[in-house]
Image (cartoon, rainbow, N blue to C red; front, side):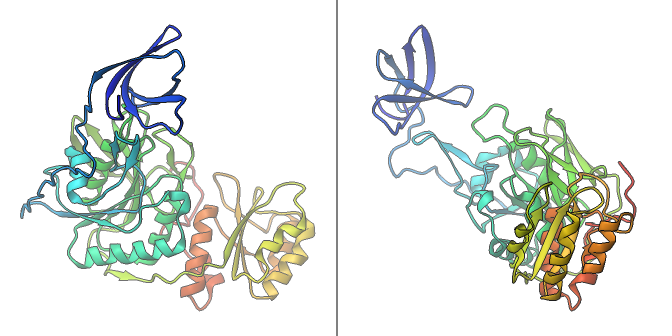
Length: 415
């Protein structure tokens, strides 16, 4: 009995059938069930039958034969760039892990439905968990996207872990002027699960990358069903659920567009104004100021929380309501501003915009030098401030100007 064998395990009137995986202890068996989940079973009193040996025929050191991706001159070219995540990953049944060996052939093996939709180029920028994303990787990614477009890509799909995708999409929205679509996508559920969203998200993203909307977008499930993917503007999107397939939403607006998906047939449509393909000249401004903090205010928080911004170039505050913190904080914030820290106020409310002119606290914050963040999402405001501090002669003024759809003219729900 070895990892990779299909087994039936009976213990305590329970029967489990699946693929045997390696176990970290000799006391337990780990079996990957047909539904994609792993189950741990005590070996004691377990009756194990091997149904089939090495069902995946995986010998140490063996790799799948690479398939050759033929170039079709009648199809557009889409560059597939990986930063990690599970969307184009496959399962190593020897270890039970989801792996991300990545080139164009790997993606087509993982998502065969992509075949015939475009010519593909595959490129790896990073292979990290999205919580380990850093501004340095954002810069590497922006450069890679720039190079792929410069080399003739008609669109770019960036495969990214979902937890911090909104931050990276915002970063590229500010760092790049793009004449073609740049589409971020990911997978909430891994490829070995029957409910995985990787195939539909990948297919819809490629179709969006072939569209006429030359913006940075996020393409993910619009509902729990496999029917429609939403296209969110990269600076207005937020992950609002930990595990649902339709976790991503455009805040304060309907999504930029959608990709209908049914039986492999797709239709891309847009409901809001967007930059057209070829409208902008390709350009890149990848510099970022990394010394920027984001601080969420809560009732009772001590003023010493502002110490996090001491000596930093920028601070984004996530205030209450219209953009408030405790009124006693105004003087300390003024000291930070006087010392050269650009302080921007956003709201922890999901919808709406800040307005510092309604209550006394807001006016005191304005007098202290706080910049109103309008209706920017706090995470987007942090990324924009990092960019503005490195690229603008007047970053405070730049923060009030809409650059990539991050600020709307009016807060009108569901426009």
